Image (cartoon, rainbow, N blue to C red; front, top):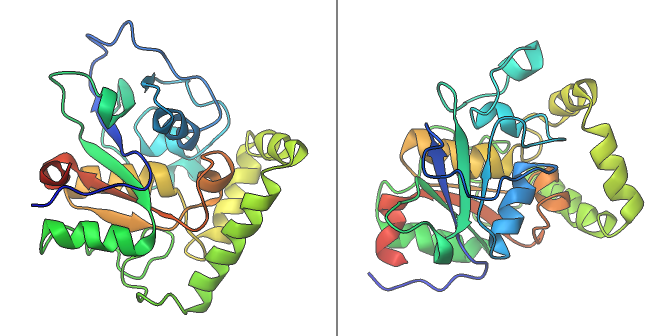
Length: 245
């Protein structure tokens, strides 16, 4: 296979059942998983452990870093089964020697991500959630002319402008610390716009389905992850993408 060129540096993710060997790895403490991936994109390697994520109410649960307790948390699915000791996130260029990622997160223009998936061959993409815009961009039509897709694009471009404001950034961090706000937002946004784009759609789904997924960015992916609204995100099992790296 021909090696692919990437618009955004790919990030490798390893779900850890033990912290053995990771004692000296910088521990992430911050707003969200999206933000941890942003830091890895910039060249850092970090490990997320229970308690690492201080604001986002979604990602600790779906990544297995927190057991679901409330009705809201129990509604978040699919999740990593069992408990994760940690989640190692690193640019592929610095990924720990002798360790292979479970999933590789790739972001870029929609056409580039479709080409990447096509290079992997038939069966590279999951097909269980086709048409569910919260979970995947697959099955929504390549031209993206539906009302829901138009709404996602408009929302993400608006958020990319708003996030330049320090006040807006501080407001989102303050609001989403509250489960009541997260619960209301989840109810309003569910399958209307992209949801949990980096943690569930680009990490957990490829991990548990053993197949790739392509997703629009969610609110956190734009505001906390700093992603371009013109791009999309995807995740692929390492075994599928390895020949293209």
